[in-house]
Length: 149
Image (tube, rainbow, N blue to C red; front, side, top):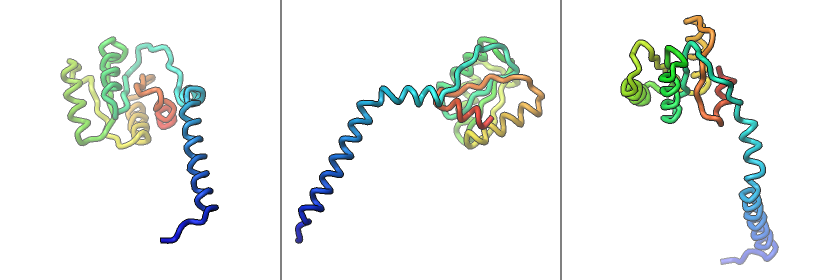
């Protein structure tokens, strides 16, 4: 077995050391820059008022629960949820039924991504000639959801 020349070994160790030091610095300083990125990603919540429908972006059980809670508060006569047809539609339907939401007040929009969420939501709003909807999503997803809707 041949030995690595000293300069190659030294450069390799130095590179590893720099990477480890950089990783430590990123981790230690995260509390300084992560909140700034979070503020940039998040869209500020507006005051909630009665709307024509509550639209919940799929993919998250807490989002669905919050949408159901808003519906129960009387903020809209309809609750729409987006998501995949397989699996998510069934579990969402059970969740909505267990919450006592009437079938006539519930719509499931079959979508595959944030982009298709936006397309389906916009098409449904136009078709129903709605004036306002309340979008439910996570803070880190809010800017992307707004851009797609």
